[in-house]
Length: 264
Image (cartoon, rainbow, N blue to C red; front, side):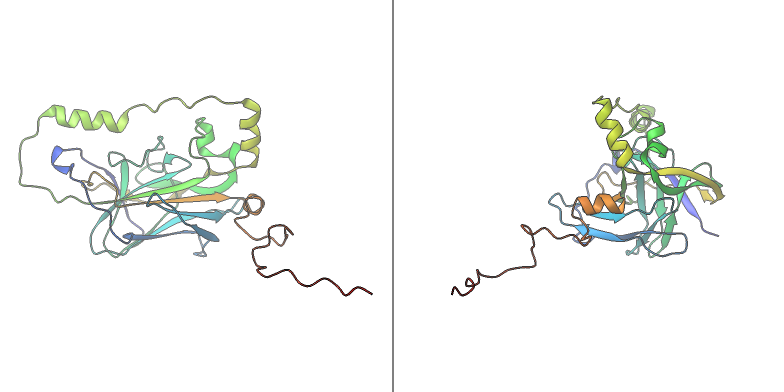
């Protein structure tokens, strides 16, 4: 049986130390089908220190976020799909105060759906944006993005007495209502929705979790963003080479002007 740890990170002041980002991310992440095969992924170069890639989504396919902990220590994972935390469904900022999964050192786990209870999830599947879980809440702020923020653990200090207001501030930060999404052109939004991929709220299945104590460091060790799109959209963006050549933009041809044909 797979076991997950659904955790609410405590917000004590002793946990507010910063962590210097590691030279190498402490996890590897793959988006896989239930049978284990990985969806096609294209890494992208970035300037902000995050790890980003494009993913080719397959309409109707169920998928799982498979994470491998390459370290010997426990890690906390805040996972958001289309901008929604996959444990409580709320709008996510990938913050340490959000519900997170805990992954043991050296372990690999697959996170396959929206958590409905400690006993079950509703499976992820690729679908049209109009059918997506996020669209049901009118949230288009992170359309088609699977995001993972990785937090290292702060070892607890010797016992001490905390004032109630310290916890109150943490709870308020974790449960504050998200700001309203900005309004745009209805026609433009509808066109974007029709073309975009999203993640649906799929069938219920048994997937048990339990709560453990885990205090995350203030800053994420690494942040991973995977933008999934339909095949046609990746072709239009020239993320994939789809067999069409542009005679004015063929990067494979590097040469000099040939001599002209002989004239008679």
